[in-house]
Image (cartoon, rainbow, N blue to C red; front, top):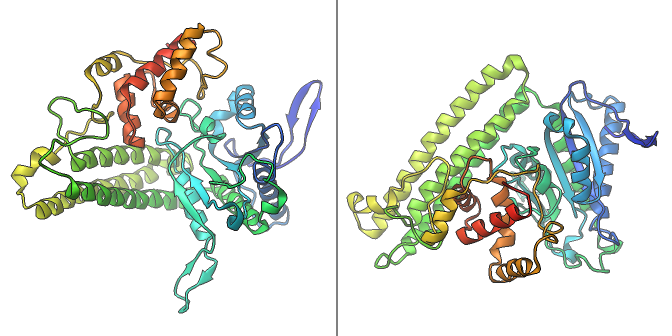
Length: 465
């Protein structure tokens, strides 16, 4: 809980009201840029401070019980401050159950245009946090009722997004750090990084909404026990079913619209020998990937329950997993049946197109044979915890090598977008081919040449072996 910070004897100390246990939940916000502005980023720090003040006031007044996990509030320089804090406090990392990163949360939507977004953590880190934060945002969005009073809905723009990065959650959610951390942000902003990002662009009601959402999320996780864990588990199972059902609709539309007189394609450039292709084959791989990742997400909830309750809770998770598996089979069978009916082809003739083998830990292999062979041979091991940025590391390389990479980036825009995912999926066991497969299953993007070239550069910079 919030306290004061001072220096004594050259050392930084933080005083706070702590929870009764060793575990923690973190709220993170930052002030950045040479000239910080109103929304970017005074709004996120202001909302986080208000969440801290409100929680402390409610606990002191006895209106909320003191949570058994400590809530730690971090106000840092963006990126650099988070790296610095983690480096100086590595002993805290295993204690952190989840975090929340705030970035640009006070926009007047009429002026700035962007919705309020819950950005989930990357799929490479096991997490319940993104789904929980999204659910709380929906609960706080009951602004008005319909005419009959039977339903409520929000009057502000909001949405949920998969991981994108670009702020401190990108560091915390790296699997080598392992702190699942969604982000709350508004994007796009018409005045982003300009002198027009002034206080008149800030909406007090939006700031209040962001602070309420932040405080609710942090306190819920800090206080969570078996009842809350069961709620979150059900939330994750339901979200999986909605997620893959929507994905099936998209792939089925692609399957019904594709020209079957032409060879099918996959998400990448070419196709591994003998591998079934087409939208429904891709669907089978994507559904299996999301099913396995959701199983890992369930594991992140177990730590919320006490030692004596873990066995009972694991039985609950086993039941939910069995239900998800049944739903997965029904979904794929239904998609195939609908595609068969629409195409006028029978099941036997469709099998070669739709029955894709689903590897345990990789997507379909797409890419020129040369790069595929390179990627198959290389198994990278990251040298540092946390994601690395090549800026600051390439200065020691020859100029022609730096120019070669810049030229490649200009021709390959996906290289910058893929870099974080390519690092996250490297666990010291996966080959670059497997890493590219996992990245494709998460993002839909795949570039084996980029993957190999990127890791060769990381090796030259001493960032991987």
